[in-house]
Image (cartoon, rainbow, N blue to C red; front, side, top):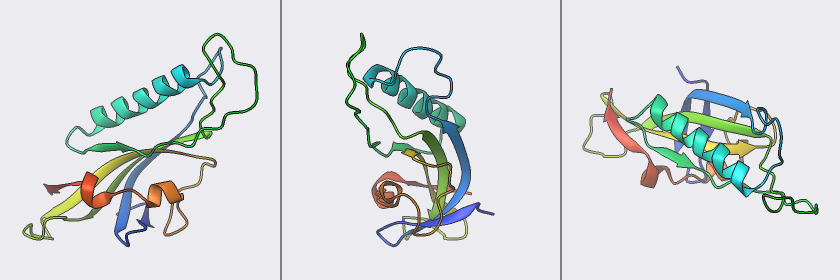
Length: 143
């Protein structure tokens, strides 16, 4: 059973099987949001997603950065990711028409950032999430 269904801009329908929402900077004790911190945050999310389900490919939706007009600190300019980090495992029908549709499905784990802790649904999901190239990134596997 899926948590919700997301409709991509391509018209492909995806079932959201698992979703993890975390505060982007929730564990940050000192310092400030900058390229170094953001790269470490993204790297950690991607690594965790890959270890959680090694047979499913992982894709990062490039995040929109906010660059407030603040003086740069010792680690460079301030760059702020959206406040909610999302990792979702999606499933859809098999991509290869030669695969039995009852025994196969396609899957992809997607990492993205959004401004609210809202579960993506239908065509109301973030536009960047709805633009994922499912056919080019997801992989088929047997159930």
